[in-house]
Image 1 (cartoon, rainbow, N blue to C red):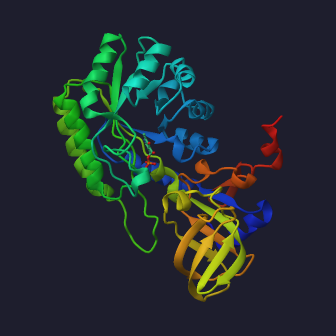
Image 2 (image 1 turned 120 degrees about the horizontal axis):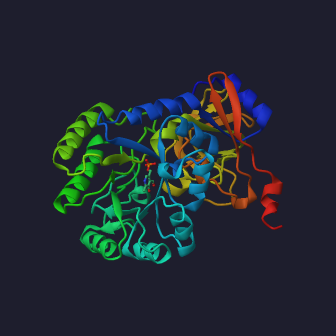
Length: 402
Ligand code: PLP
C-alpha cells in the first residue's frame, strides 16, 4: 500500500473506523500482469465481479480494457452502471430462478448453464436462446481449501463430462446456439502447473468431442500470497511460456481461428490492492490466552471465519512486545476471529489494526449481521484519496422496512 501510518491515522480520524482502503495503482498493475498472461492475440480477460463489485472499481477495470464475468442480474445491473455493454458481460449461472434467467435472457447476453435443468429452464423462458455457454466440471478441482474448490465429483458446480454431449444435443434439438464452453476449477491456486492442467484438460475435452465454439473460458483462480512470512507467488513467467505454446498448438488445428480464449480472475485483480483498517477495543487475558478485541468482526471480513483463511495482520502501535495471541472481532459468535495463536506485537486500546490483502471477497461478502453497518470504502491514487462508497447508516438498516 502506498500510504504511511500517519496518513492512515488521519483517514481514521476523518472518516471513522473501520475503513476498506484501496490502492488504485496496485489494481492497475494487477490488471497489466493478468493481461500479459499469454501473448496469444485470441486471449481475453473477464474480471470476476463477485470478488469486489464496488462501482468505482468496476469503472476502473472497464477503463483498463477488461470485460466482466457475473453471477446474476444484480451484478449485471452494476456492470451496466459501470459502463460495460451487453457484449462485455457474461453470466455464469448457478441455480438461477426462472425470473432471473428471463431478466438476463432479455438482454441477450452470454449465459452459461451449469446443468441440464438450468439449460431447460433457459429454453423455457427464452426458447431457442442463441447465446448459450456450458460450464463443465473437469473431474478435478484445486484451490486453497474445500470451500473454494469448485471442480471434482464432491462439488456442486458444472456439468459432468459424461453429461456434456447430452446437453449439446439438447441445445441442437431445441434450436438453441452453443457459443462457448467454460469451467472454473477453484480459487487461490499458487502453482502455475495447476492452471496449465486445467487449460489442457479443457482443450483436450473440446478436441476429443469436436466441439466448435466462439469462446473457451478457463476460469479464474490465480492466487496471491496472503502469508507475508512466505514468498509463495504464482510463477507468471513459466505460466506465460506454457500457455503460449498450448494456445498456438491448439489454434493450429482448431477450425475456428477466431475463438476467444478467456480467463476470469477475480481475486488476483483486487486482493492485494486493499487493507482493512480497524481499531483495537480491548485486550483480554484469560489464563495463557490473550484476546485482542477489535471492531473488525466477520460482518466486515468473513474470510477468516468462513474459510479459516490467513491474512497478514499488523498494528499501528508504539509497543514492541510480541506474544502469541488471538485477534477477534465484535460479532456475537464464538467463531468470530481474524487470527488464532499468532505471535504479534500486543497493541494498546485505541491503536489501529490493519488486515492486509482484503480487496477480494472482503467488502463483497460483508453483511449486516448483528445490525452492524458496512464500512466506508476509500481509494488512494498517489497522494489523493476519494471515498468510493460511503459508510452505511442506521437509516440504511431501517429503509427496507418502509
Ligand atoms: N469464475 C467462476 C465461475 C467462479 O466461481 C469464481 C470464483 O468463485 C471465479 C471465476 C473467480 O475466482 P478467483 O477470484 O479465484 O479468480
